[in-house]
Image 1 (spheres, one colour):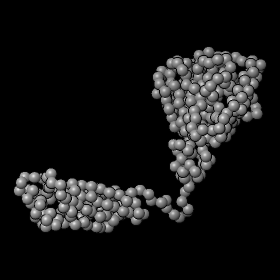
Image 2 (cartoon, rainbow, N blue to C red):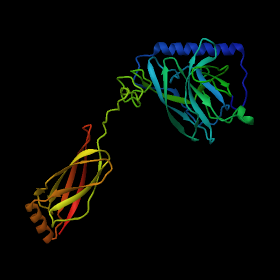
Image 3 (spheres, helix red, strand yellow):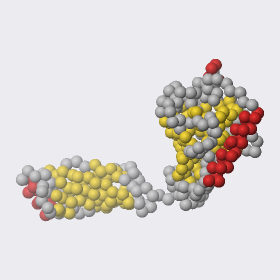
Length: 351
């Protein structure tokens, strides 16, 4: 591979490499069974990467002789993430490419392209994407870092590793990379190498370009909003978020028989506050009279819960015996869409 030395190829060798690619892909596709919901393709360098590829170069796994395969299986898929085992050089750049063979030898249509990523050296790097792929597409890589001096033949990411001779990668140093949808001519070929990359694929049952397992919130119906259909024009998405509230209270006196709680809601909501008095270790609870109010968003309001005469007497006796009576306040919230929320607070009582 073009890492620290150049390699010359004859026309016969190039034709043989292309034949290997076509045969390997056809054989793999014929053996493929029913599509699973999630699958992985490609292979990471099983050792410690020490090589480096030419800067500003594009690569594809053109032929393979063993598993795991670099070919997308039959079906509708979304590539949701990819991984690479980096060498020890800091600051190297690498991006995922998905390429589709054309009828012209060495020519591939660029199906998908992720951003160039700066690699963390000396370990496995994983990045997330959303690239629609189809059966027969091939994993590829784009090495970044503009070449400078010897970087033209090395100094980039460790894009490939040694493998049996029936494995072939094709590549080309392309200063200006073709855009998605255009053809890239990868004229050079190297036998005995596999790309240092894996891809995670998720099925796309509704064909909307979102992986059904981790990206699509509506896998049974197509849509453009995280895989869900947008609401009709002029309408707003359905509100499914429950309201929330912040309760604030301080130690309150039993003299007036009223317990005050300050409440702030994150949206307009109807709130109902209820309370119960517990005295020390006594098993009996005394219910307070509830309070209901309609609140606007982010405006603090005071709710008053009232102690019954029995509850006030019980609290007074507890304080005389140096016990610690408490009122546990629970608030139920409901917004205009019918979503329900709740909040709780404990208030300590004093004379």
